[in-house]
Length: 180
Image 1 (cartoon, rainbow, N blue to C red):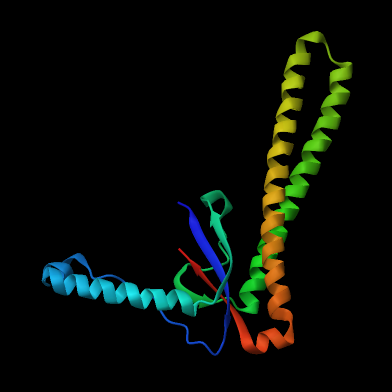
Image 2 (cartoon, rainbow, N blue to C red):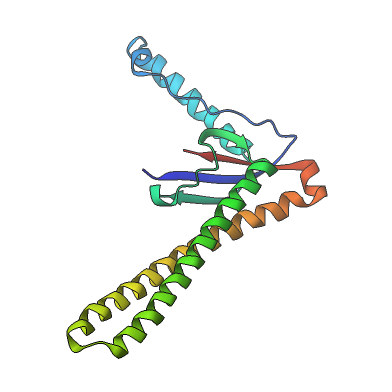
């Protein structure tokens, strides 16, 4: 299942409103159609104000289960992205970047070893070793894509650190996020 994370920059003086949910199925059945429509309109109007209270949307991320941002807790209602959480996110992406770099280096080492073997091998083993080399190149391509993706996300969160790290910004502004 995918996760959706949105990060906002908001002024601290503006009240942060919590989103209201629509009535449950049981609640809907106990009300008349007119009353129900009125309640839904009121909730929708209120939720528009919630969206305004979030501030300026900086970016939106979609992550898949293989690329989950596990260090950031799920929070459908707006939550403050603290410096501690932001540092954990940056560390998470640094680790992922290092993992990708090591995997690429390992595959390059494997290719070098296989190329030495292929020069000394018989024709019978040539195809097998060549397939192993092709697999290493495929792994490198995959890891390079992952590396690019994680570097992109690291840069986004590093940008946030720059915003909130500025003392004049941190006095008046805060970062918030939603994740569901």
